[in-house]
Length: 274
Image: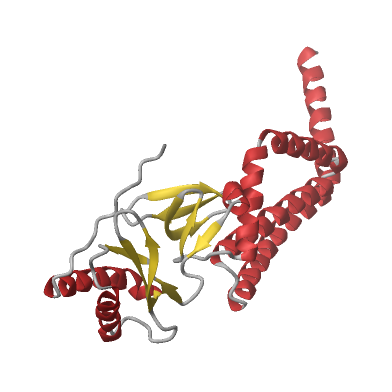
């Protein structure tokens, strides 16, 4: 008798489950179709958006960021649509997401500042990959522009990570923005030295150096007269690619020419502060 009762309960549960499955199957099938079609559509949209941005020569870092935003934004919308198809109330779920987003935003204020700075750098482009810049007390070649930090490679092969928040709010010197760059070399001579002779020698060196640009014209001027001697400023223009070579060659050639003319450099004496 008890066995027959259990069998009846089992039959009732099975019948109820099958009936509920049959009633619910249209929603389940629709949700699954929406999920697979939506996933395929998201990939297509992401691929097309990447092609459009590449065709318009958008910054590679911005392409990656916008692609991720589009991908995850559409996925969140797809998830909400799927659970709505299953009959789950989506309004409460959206409210939970909003509250969670607010809590995360408050706890990550510094990171959000860096995020906003990264967006400003990517959009307004004060520098790009490969540029030589000086900012936040550091200088080097830009090797990567990320959403939160920018990476610089120094001349001594060190990688510096600068937060984008501070970078976007501070002064940035971009040495690569323009094609040409001017040297500002300073040498010292004594009061006994013939200034005109020194200027003639240096001007001749600059004229014979093929890496020195003739326009704008280089100049050799008296920069300062100190207690220990006279400071001569050498200002010559060169391309960014030749800049450091020019600086070295001018000093080296000046030393050889001064030695031949028996002209001695005057070392700079730091004045004592009271």
